[in-house]
Image 1 (cartoon, helix red, strand yellow):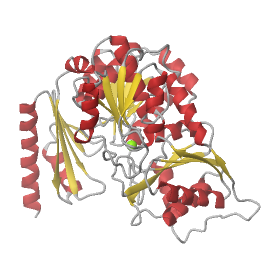
Image 2 (spheres, rainbow, N blue to C red; image 1 turned 180 degrees about the vertical axis):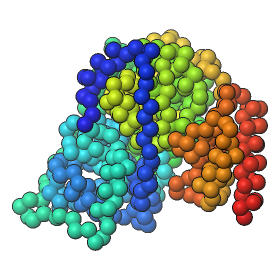
Image 3 (cartoon, rainbow, N blue to C red; image 1 turned 90 degrees about the vertical axis):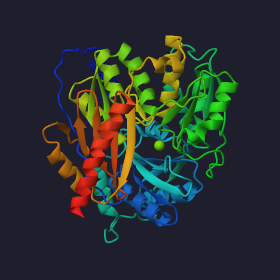
Image 4 (cartoon, rainbow, N blue to C red; image 1 turned 135 degrees about the horizontal axis):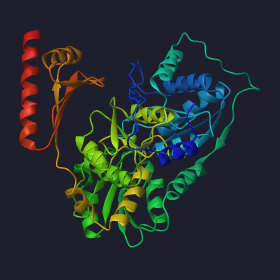
Length: 481
Ligand code: MG
């Protein structure tokens, strides 16, 4: 179905900047139970072992063969993982239990070796949450169409084929497989780029405890850690790597004179940074910085959702590269990257403005470990500091606000009508594009609220654009009441 990576490298080498690009847009389809990030909810309420068992049976029916199962550090992980495994084995699948590991590690392990994967994780959510993400045999998250089929099988009236005693599956240990992920990342970097560099890692008591310190050590870094004992109660900080939660990391970076600090969410597909002065690096800056680094050596397309700052596009275009936009959600980014490559276009990088970056040379999913390693190589090559590099990026200002209303789709339709004489993009919600700034209005899929984002060159123009949209929205809500 997809090109092998070796053929993909040949396309990258054959790239000509003047090439005409195919427009490619993946559409979001609505699902019942699964959201953009799999099934997720509060344990014991929405997420139960019974649901996990049923998902295991449904997945085993859809993807017969051997399935790799992994989890993050949450206290409810073992109960749910065992239920998923029971469902899989009951339908005749063999399972490999990889234990606790980052989701990109499970995706790497699955890619090309297993019929699929199931990851028990709630990513950045608080400890009372958990969930399940399904991985396809190519290592990508299951797409909307297949997920809708899987949801159809969860219907209680559907008869799933559980097997007799001589056909049930068996379980095999796979805790050692995480090492292949660590080795695969370090194999992209020559020598010891981290030699003489101190780095502080904050895995937030999550799955990256097993990988990021090892990756950075293998690159020659002196590694210090904080919150690096796996613990599903998350005693040091919550799994979301927010600036407020990373004050301990920031203090340790400054005290140890480290080159940077890095923190992950619970399942370590995202990575965020603290610069050498102890300042949190806004995630669009992180994206632009790494995009700039990649665009200097490879030319092609960067894929990202419509919500990413224009800064990334500005940096890419300066280096002779371009940006392709997708709906919001890493799965749409990853799948668009693969489809563009299948269509013969070179795709050099992808990701979201939340620290979730996708390196196609490694795999088509957000990868926190690869992000950590790339930052080391970037600093070694430029000989600069993180704050020095950030200062040289184009100035942008982003506003993120939300308005509580259940009338999301009504508002978006009305705004599209009112702004029809401007440049509009309906890839996800409504994006109003002006010369050097844009506003994005999206209805939340899970809550009764509308998100408004404005990306502009400075705070004053951003504020003015936001106020204009807000005033229009308020008026529309008033008249519709
Ligand atoms: Mg995550």
